[in-house]
Image (cartoon, one colour):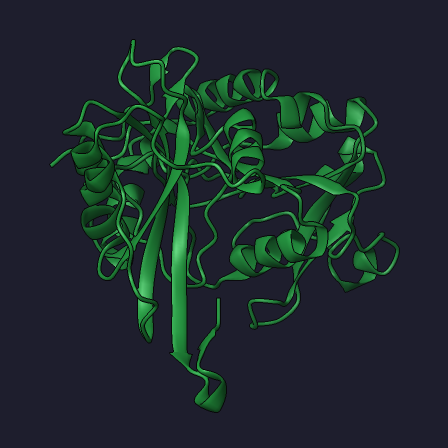
Length: 340
């Protein structure tokens, strides 16, 4: 069946590693590690430089003047983008740069601490047992805590693997998912912009997403930028929803209108929903609209793809804008109660 449209970059579609297909999280981590094992330091440096060049054309990065968080690279490893050139770029522009310090085992035990502005001082930070530069307790005492700062307009995050729908697979501890979730609740309104940094080998066909996994706003690799929905589409979707638009265009036949619309009763249980930007057939004169489809089962196979197939069979064009989950349980005398 037809899947959601593949997000495009400035130079065309970002292609996933042909060696890595959809699989469980542990299997995917092992497969990506195997793919990365053949990368040389020179290849990593070349890819990292290309990522920085791609970032410079991303508005959220290019226009950042306040504060940004970023991870620091593991010493001597070729399994992630080298972020030192990115840190240098941000500091040179006067951006306040925050770096992580893990101080416990709970997912919420990761702080973001501001660097002094001196790149060499940042490079001199102590190393963890994994070779990651990280402030120790003594250094942290003199650093600004930006963990819950609303000044953080940009979060540049690592990952083991990423996909074209901006799914992210981490190492399984949940630190970044908790941090991203907290920042999104704190700021709201589309802030902060969360961008994953990926080597080519880390772009895969599909990342399995759990209930606590946070989808990113974008992923930047040497090939370009992947964005599940553009800022323009997001703003237009908000305007359409505020005006109550989203019905089929005037002039649609009765049979076609019936095929495009359906009603469901809100039932107790777990559901997935998908938001689509739907454009009428070319030359029809109709305006694009937003459609929301919900159902049980897999987000992609049972909800999004089913809705896309239905629209495309009638000549409509669909662009996925995002989606999520709804959990509804019996709220007692007051009826069903939504939890998320």
